[in-house]
Length: 299
Image (tube, rainbow, N blue to C red):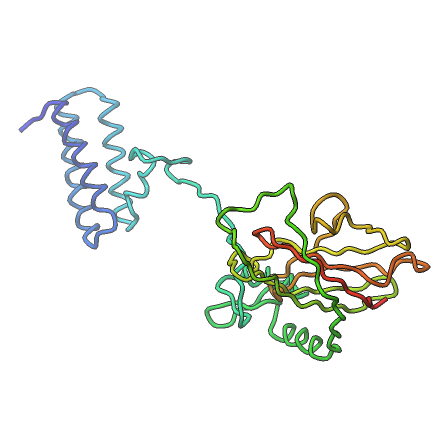
């Protein structure tokens, strides 16, 4: 029985739909054989019916033949035709997704789910790269390197805790509003520990571990930590300590997510050009602040 060109067009369209729906099925091979037989029949009827070339039908038949070939190779037709399915796509149906880096995940046991997280921890530890431990990753290029760093840390003399005077509390900076949700009639004071070590003739290092009770904002509710040193006349060279960690000239600490402390360095000066005491300013996310006087620097 002969078919009209319009009838042939409809049959080719149905065949294309059937070919697309067979992608990924265990019976793809048999379906491909059946469709190939139907394709041959349609090609013959096209030649008998029209007697001339029909570009539109020939293009559709060619598309059907290509999809049948993909079925025989076991590929997924639906993914190959995703660009023409009406869904948003670029580059022939492949939609590019911009990778978004995740924040560093803190680890108590030194294990991380991804190599990227372990490499970020390695940079804070003092080494480079990462190595795999089972299904997780650890910092440094190898476990031996990590053990060497740990041994060096254990062999280093423990830093002496610096004497700390009674802290003086100041009001929050006037240029920053206190969130209403953080207002507390009697908030607990900021807690902190301060350690200092001499690095060389002109520089010393300070580490600060601090927390603001009642706040969960990372890290431990603390927004910033800074240092204030004073010249031979007793004037601060790091801004106004009455508004801790704000304004020009401030020198703020960097938070180390691996060791969970704030780190900053101080200068011993030249010819006693700086005082032998300094202050550490600590500011919480809700505006609470404290200024801790270190009365005996390691210089």
